[in-house]
Length: 622
Image (cartoon, rainbow, N blue to C red; front, side, top):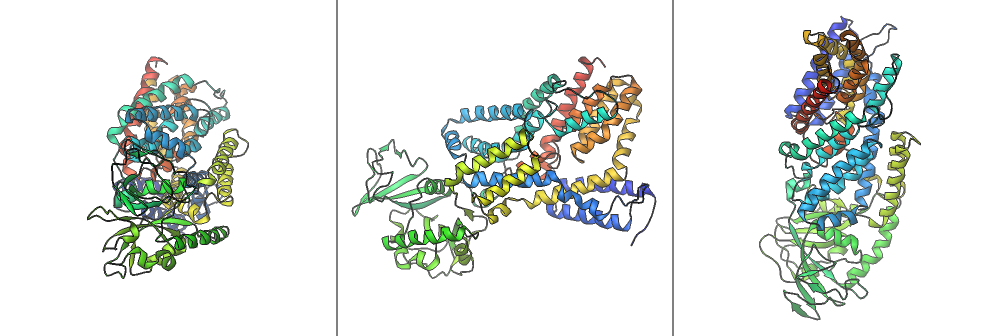
């Protein structure tokens, strides 16, 4: 069904739909996925019912054109890099550096935070900033933790620093290259590599000052998705069997801590039938000791990955069974997704396990999982796990293959707490994963192959080499990002195809104050800076460079000055998550909402605008 009407209707519909989309994204009464899918659906219906033909008779709003956003190379680059980043996290490749950060004083952590921001800004001027952000995300998460802050306080600054760095050189951003290329197409000399570096440095330094000193006031203290439900400091009681040959044998307690177990609080030690209570000063760990500890889930996971021989069970026979089953599990992992995962499981009311001891249950034989720790809110236990009777609402930290955890979900004796299931890190793959990551960055940074091709190949290699499995790779892909960027790119295409973007630009440029060179440059900058957060920065560069050249000629200004206004303004993609791909990358780690970017980024856009206006006034004498 087609209805042919005036082209102005198409233009005003897309402009109205753009305003409506911004309002809905900011209002956040519906999920981003729902708004994005609704937006894509409306555009598809509109484009088929009310086709918009060009001079050749081609419908510019056809289904293929509108859905191209979901196959956009930039989108797949982001998704592939998310998979690579998840692989780096899965194998804990950066853990040595992260542990070093966690042990430093809080004041040093802030210095490291500022140093990283400056480093990202500098390197973003000569390298693609997306892989840099992926590498920095887990490091800054550790920095935030050491400062006692949420990741939401550091993720947006990371993205903004990367964007600011792209303003410094010609290759810092694809936007810069597009503006330079458009100038060449219009008969002007293109920009040289360092032609605007001095101005870019000024803009970047002003932006970094805002990020370091002002931006923290606008950022939310969001907990991670899991922490927002379950908290970050809950402790489990666990036991560690010190077997002959353990690296912990001979470890001495100094100032209340065992050096190899810094994040575990030792509650008591069972030795040859005797119980040793704190303090443990100068006690030395011996073979066959059983250490009862209290620790967070993260600390227990870290200990398990550092000392993979530590498995907790009710008896020696069961432990031998687990060791033999481990080999079978490793064989299955080569062809399936049945990897080991950690989960928190609550003893359900009326469970058959209540009042029974672990030694009576043979938990591993029955359920295929190992109990690593137990949390009981009522009191602190002073006995071995196998001698403790389960109580209603006890929470168990268990380790087992995926199929065993799924079986617990269907067992009425347990409640697997939603959002607590995580894969056990595979640290032995860390050197391999980091090598793949380094090669991916190198190939993209030096232009050997395109960035999307390098990112996709890197993601595939991570899966093929076992750094993470297919299930983990799919889970790393954020559907919110996929739907959001695909639908907004469709909207941007519609706005450009129907002439809506051109109409907005020309209407604003036709106002009376645009006849004054300074006001014309200032107006050009703020218009491009706003639209670059709605369209893509590349689209703004293509649309506005010819307008800027024409406007500069009409007011008697060097066209290169106004071309720079477009270049810097198109890089001001701070106010929405769709403005730039690094914003999308930090959206999930920071647990941000759409309006968080508006609150944090809009003031920075204004700061950049004022800074450039000052440059126009005093450097270019407009």
